[in-house]
Length: 476
Image (cartoon, rainbow, N blue to C red; front, side):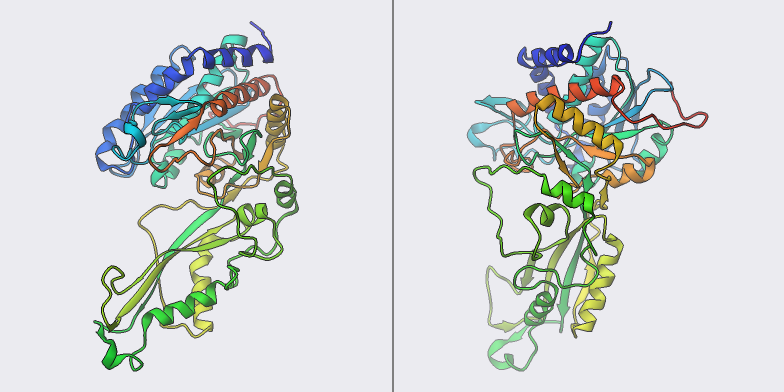
């Protein structure tokens, strides 16, 4: 068989309009893979051992379930289709776990574990994040195989089940199971687009560091009438410390928290981004954040710091007392230009230099946070993929230097030494971590056509040369 690119895309569109994609999505959503729920271990394994493999039948993939080295954490599915040692190898990523279903809190009795269609919205937990998106990758592979009879490249499908809890154990799984797959590029399908009508490539993610600030002055509170004005107020001390960290305009004042400069390729990518204003989303405060930066640069090329929560006393039932302590939690999101390991030490130096020695810093370790990563926008693989997306869509693709949120890009980039990119088909209003999660059918269909074009072009030779491999690196 030979076939054509248009023929493959036509097959993908026909499968979508004919209900095959929807039928497969219903099977994925029906598995309650809540990684935040300790009782879901069996469902996470079933998703890897049964649900996804059932969709791969007849596609020539050989799969294995990779156990998580951490107790009570979900496994990963690694399924490979090998066509030749001299061909490029694409590692395709998705995550099968979802956040809690929140049954009973959805509108009009919607069931989180079933796909319900209302107008152009397909409701169900995982329709947007991430089952609907990695299903796009699978169905696009199917369309190319049906049209051409082969992919023209080696494909490694990697589905993990812990992304929603920070991917615990993922690095060890990748190191143990993927070092020999000989990947040339990582392509993940996850996240929302900046604009629903423009295809997108994301090249990594910002890292995250969370910590608590605490001022504890005594073992108990004391009557405010008798002791106000005499005893130091920990909330006031903490407020002054916070004011030294962030200016009243939101500018970061801690030396070492922000990049020394924004790389030229990143500035160019930010300058070309197309944003879409969606109903219900907030408008940026133009006066907030680093002066002189565009909206895109503030989101994708700079550091942000926010206060997640804070408390002193009992806000629900205040009493007349000078409190014993005050605390708040902060989170810093940083690009790859700033080493996440330096965030807390830099803050300690800053607080001490400004006289805030009473403020304690307690790093948060209760949830794994993703390190920062970014693939060079000028990398040949990125250029080739952007050309493919633009060719299919008829408009230039958005090239996002790195995701503003978290994802496991750094793990794959560091462990496998490959360019990492994400091709999302979600939208910002999908309620992906809330009740009423939904995907837009038009975006899913468009994403399927785009990915079919991507797979076709890679198989046709529109890619950089495959990396040379040592003995034993090919599993075929």
